[in-house]
Length: 207
Image (tube, rainbow, N blue to C red; front, side, top):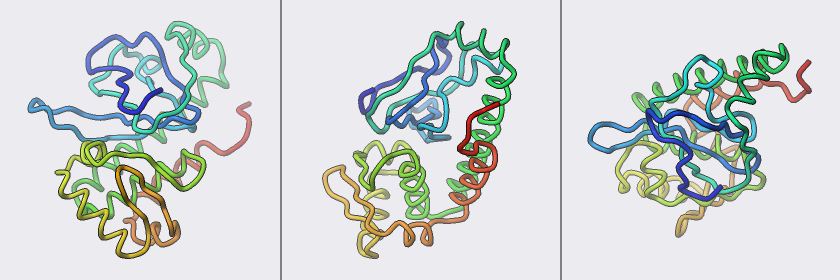
């Protein structure tokens, strides 16, 4: 999957679900004026297209690849059939859905109450959790769309983190130099979401 690739648009029927392996996908809400804001991020811990097994055929959100990589794409009907046949699959997908709802709620709180540099810390940390290594390729415009702020706000926040020695930022490439420092600089929202994901989706085989 390529950077900026749109997997689905609001209101369109979902023909497939995606299980990212090395890619990261942003779920965005679009306003009537064309502005967007990220409501959740999905990586190798989850699935894009939960509306299918939650009883809906469409979603009001846009799904956009914000970090290029690989993914499994499964036919929607096959996924729904397996969800209905297998208790293990059903329980795992429902636990993931609960974790995703927690992330959406905490993102709304973060966007309303916390500074842009804290939001950027959360965004970077959540991306790092879903990638190998400490480098991210994210253009300024994409970060602005994810956070729902002006590009100037992203520049100011990135420079703050760079001056603090936490990241190195240039030409769409972000290298995290001090992850513990980034976690300290972040608001509580990252920790709340990570704790819930670790609780609901432990690293073991579903039974």
